[in-house]
Image (cartoon, rainbow over all chains, first blue to last red; front, side, top):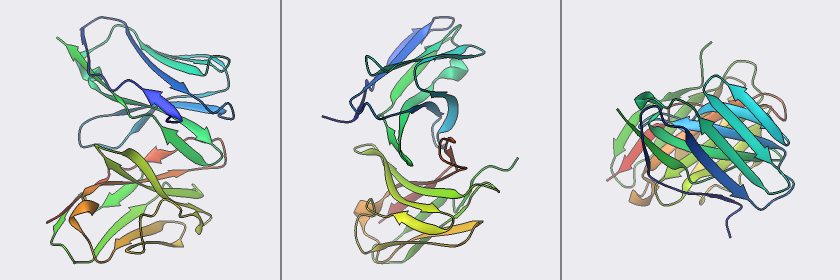
Length: 109
Length: 113
């Protein structure tokens, strides 16, 4: 079993939809949780960064962490075609980041 | 603010040749990471430096791979000799103190023929 599980998609939604992306993990020692967005032929770009459980909101993006369920989510409101990318969850284990495999998102105009 | 800078962006070379990838981390960051990304295996950590010292190289695939960080603003990843299975995108990332997020460069797309 992988330490971090993420549905690879692809996930296709119409413009304006609310998108929900999720990861589950097995290591209860993880403390820092991140979402990265990766466009084709670019490096992962940090989107959201949270510590421990709770919610964090930044514009159209909301990150949720539920440590009791070992489950994290990223919500995108009013999705735009420019949100089309691969979204990677990542978790901190000491200095090492453990990445999910990424979910491909396509927002159709 | 300048981000993490990697060079070259693309490298195509023949099997057996030496390949050197370069990275300039964000100024002030004391941790540097080299990753490899493939469709099959996703993002894999190759090596981690802290304050220019290699701390964890357990992800380096084999002795053909080596990495150095001679100073706080420069690191290299070398493959010698290169093989077709080394073809991948190689990313460099840097971060500040523990708990700070990693920031990635745009990678080097490496093709070994």
